[in-house]
Length: 220
Image (tube, rainbow, N blue to C red; front, side, top):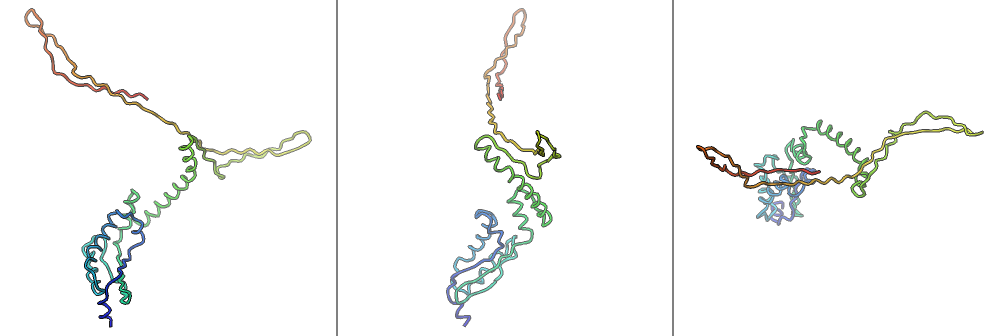
């Protein structure tokens, strides 16, 4: 019965890959490598029993040990494969995407801690940066833990008494400054140099070769 069902047309191929690969852009070299390997083997696939020709799609790939069969649904004409990737490839791709080398789990943990701290600082000034780009001025309000309270003072005004509280806190003020710089080039061409020479009782003139001189003036 199973042999007869394997003669039915194959309708669907499913490839299980690590979830992080799906976050890569379509033109990434690893995505193109996977898609290219699959396409090279699925051409001419007609019946369910032909699935075996797909198994060696990545036999020579340096990034994976190859496809493995997960399941076959003969009634639906569907075949599921699994494509595990080599250890270390995740950190290699992550380093390429982030522009920094990731050496392993411990290093990744350290980088993530630094990233979270930098993100927290950026979130604080992000609104001010947006404001300074649009209006030319931005203000970063102080955080509550930056507030410094001085010792309360009791003040008297007539027959009334009160408490004076004084606090201080740092704030950041951003101002956009547009700087313009002009670069001018002056070129003196065909400069002639004359060297007088004495020959007997008379002077003769010899003209040396011509040359170019570039002068750069920077005005701020």
